[in-house]
Image (cartoon, rainbow, N blue to C red; front, side):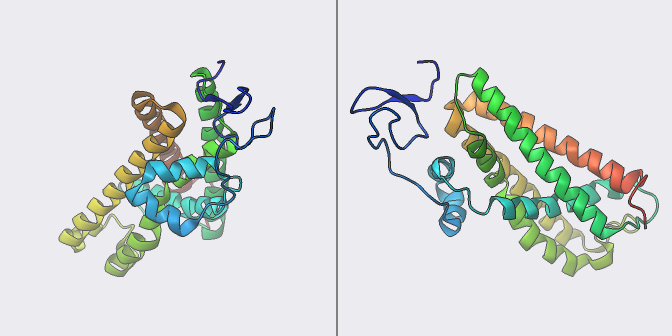
Length: 243
């Protein structure tokens, strides 16, 4: 076998990839066909059976809700970029919100496409054949906890801190310290959950815990670096996009 994820057809013995549901030679069925991703089931299974649901995400023909999740992630990443800038700016930041959203959308989409492309090449080096759309879907769905943080934690943070949420004079923890540390802890838990999901999703391709952990660390380091650079350009340097 040239690739580790090649399987033999039980009917004719021809080699097929594990994501094929029909043998290319005799057209016999190799597995159950999965057409769409069920969002409700996926969100629940990410909690109790992540390995099982990433297997379905990988094999699904149509990668439902991918665009929607990436849009939510672009808002999440924009907010994280603003948080990163808070201790590094000495004056209030006044920028065009619409332009910031557009830039974050472009950056987020470009980043995930780039990460999926690089991951595909890395899988190939490890003799694993992966389809680009499968890799992009697994990467994107592993960041669903960040969408939960955006839709649940961020509104709560706005309720408690309002206009002082992105302030460094005073900092949010100086206003309501116990609430700040509780929400901060939940934010960290969401990120840890996301890292765990990414490792689980990559393991669906690699079948190696060590490589899954290694690639997850590299991907998260790349994303955090990208967030810092976005923060530096949009909020710290303020070279562009100023009102």
